[in-house]
Length: 308
Image (cartoon, rainbow, N blue to C red; front, side, top):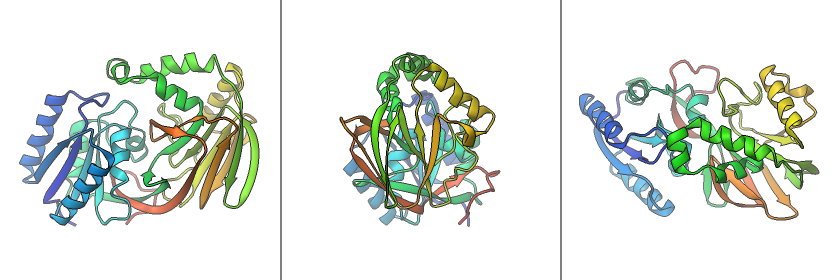
């Protein structure tokens, strides 16, 4: 397979764990030592501009693309690599780093650098989903989580890290409410009362080592739809308990469904929607599933998924 010769790295200096100059120098020195031609582009960039940059780089022989930042940075770069014969490497410098954790990518920056420049990388083809003209890789939701995303600003994330989310989560669950949600997926329709609708491609629940379900995979060509009917703090504690003891099928507060082709979500009044960690709009929305459509460099010990 061989070591990459030319790489393009997208660096987000505003990500949660970034010390801009320190990390930039560390990255540059590592690639110089491995004799890999590296160009660094600083985020943020306009969505359309980013696509042009990626396409131009491919035409110029770039054989490795790297996202150095958090989940949002990974997501934005991913959407422009779907369906293309180029792999994405991740340097997890954000607050959550959910996809990196799901892929068993080291959280230590030096170990992650060794991974992306390996001569024999562990490449996996993961599923993605598309809404409008953009692809996403992790999840999309309405209800509690978009409110949580909006309540945490970049300054809080940089200073408090995960605790910024925890503090604001506690504030949000004190004001839980149920919404009437219309769900259409794979030619089936249902209406539910829910505090949160989560459509996810990864099992990671956001807090190590908790996962939503052992049945969730990002290489099975299927998205998992979770309906949360948590009306109070006791319901929330019930969800946490079911995750810890891994008995999701017995939890009356959470219902699981499978999405194989498409899913449409509608609500009586528009509700904010988050995808891959950022608030992106409001309901209604519709997504389509794209199986095994993005090549990513995963951790060396990740073996229980489809490989290229």
